Image 1 (cartoon, one colour):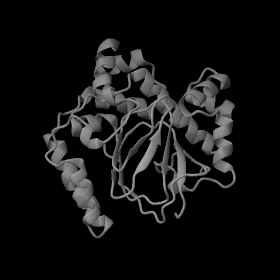
Image 2 (cartoon, rainbow, N blue to C red):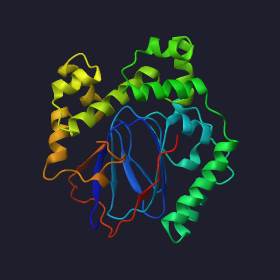
Image 3 (cartoon, one colour):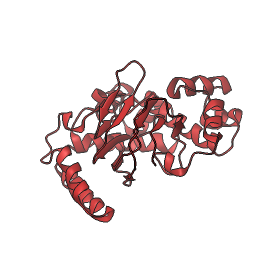
Length: 277
């Protein structure tokens, strides 16, 4: 890519760690000043963000289930909801600062060696981290498996906790409460069905929305556009390439037109790891 790029990034059921090698990205959220960073940690989100770069970006993006991020960094996840921060500002006690890890990855000659180093470092951090609650992991897995459709009281019953205790532990280890997490996962499933060609009415029924208007309202609140606008934007002028989405098989992003005066730097090189957690 030899030109600036802007993408609208919708909420997904994951936290994001971007270990950048060289040029910064700029991330904007409604109601917040833009953040311009080379390496980025984004906690769980319920609203969309716009990510921009000047045409050159290199690094590794790691998608983490929120409870895995809690174990790796030991940070209560509710402190990071809808936030973008420099990873080294997280109040963790990792032996290797994130900026040093990014520099070590950049210095390696190939992606196989970079992924090998990431596996080694993450395994070490995982073993030294604060274990996530098995019940939180089970509750999260149930939410993911049902696409956010399981009622919160039933979810609490399934893991043997009260609703209040489930909410407390989710705030610590997931960031979002179970109801908000269910909203994000339900929206994620809806985007997937719409991208596959399902109608808004059919999607609303399959995902557990009251009706099409409920789907549209939730979609607008969390992505900034209606289901129709999102679907049309992904189809025009050309369908979004698979590389434009942050998760394989998911409709997560919209490539937006570049604005006059945007950054302009030649070249681009970027890779993703597999998901963690």
